[in-house]
Image 1: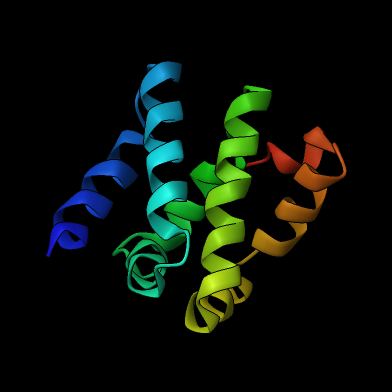
Image 2: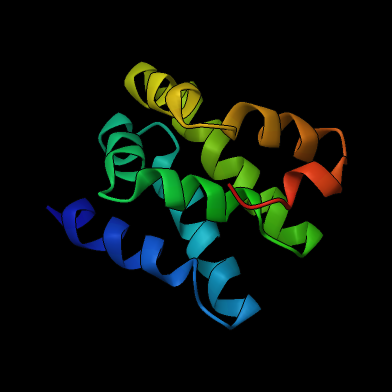
Length: 111
């Protein structure tokens, strides 16, 4: 299945030194997660899912943060299992709230 190869590759690209690469990876993950529970599960079930979620929330550029928020939103909205995994990820809910309320000092701290 395409998701089995694409999700790990895109999650890996979230660590790229290139803002453009990170942005494209986020946008693709967000689009792939929209109305596709299997993709949402793949994103939040990724071997290093806590690291992936943390990377998404530490995106520096405001456009990247919007793209990252879309990935997390789509995973939570379209897959109950993904939502549960995200809530269980230490500090994720607090960072997501901080990102949504523009409290960048909390949103940017690594966990």
